[in-house]
Length: 462
Image (cartoon, rainbow, N blue to C red):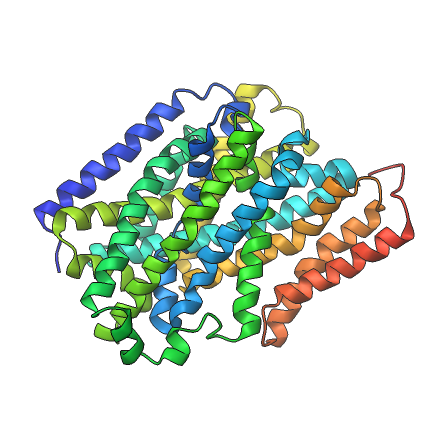
């Protein structure tokens, strides 16, 4: 089905709305501190910054893709994300906001020394970058479905350019303001698509009868170890990701930050249900399509052009917004925790702001190259892998820095930072039947417990 005039008009209007919001927020950015954290956001803008990054290609296009094959098992990304936002709101708002460091890896560095901070910065940046690749792959699938004639490189380049524009002028403020608009549009779009998919399928009862319900209506269809591990990856990964820490730090008060995180926890899981219903419907009626195209093809085939155009544009902005937020997180870590330890030539606010923007562009260019040369197309798997890697690197050392300061020697933190991801990669290599994050976290936890038993940290941190 080709794009109609109605599709084109509604796509253009929706994209112009998002661009206008980004330009407006960009005018408020005067320095690197505004760009990285802001400190002026209300609850809705905090929620917009969280959901604007967390609800992207993996939560929409990727969820429908996995649901096409495994049904309800695909819910773990948005379900785990909602639970993690709840825990963020209840336990981490004050510790994050009270800490002097702008980044999570900076917290580790301040507690355990520059060596630990550098290790965490590099490894967590790699984890975030993997999820950036997932967003580029999702954008690629969306664009090539809507415009079948467009090539691989042009579609990925278009996505990368818009990601840069989305965040490069407004930073976390743009991610928040645009995120609020995106959240409203996305909620309407995905829930409407899910309801339409259920109606067109004859209701959930008909889906139950038509599809193998032991697979499609099973939260653990891929195995308990794999799916439970996916949920844990999301839970710990969100708490270990710079982007979401920046979002709560941008709140004008603790209450605004907490309410923003709670609002995100409430709103994110239902989005996954909409994507699951779309994936199931497409499996029933289009059993031979490429799974990644399930959501965009559903919109093109079934939705009225004006509404369909809004939904397509919103899905695209969802993917773009997540990619932009992730690139901002990478930029903040490298700028604050790596470059500043090597040189102080860029400490002046305007220079630091310029460096942040250049780093965003470099991250997106590298992501563009790797996506075009072929890094795989299982979108949601990239998301889970990324979250798991971030959690294995950052979570336990960060947790100790916040809640057990002065209790662990830096050497044990450094070992844990390296041992966690090594355990994850080892689990992947041997092909364990459960999420290898469990191995990585278990190894890191053993090291941390030995460190606690060994006594207080060294007085000389390096």
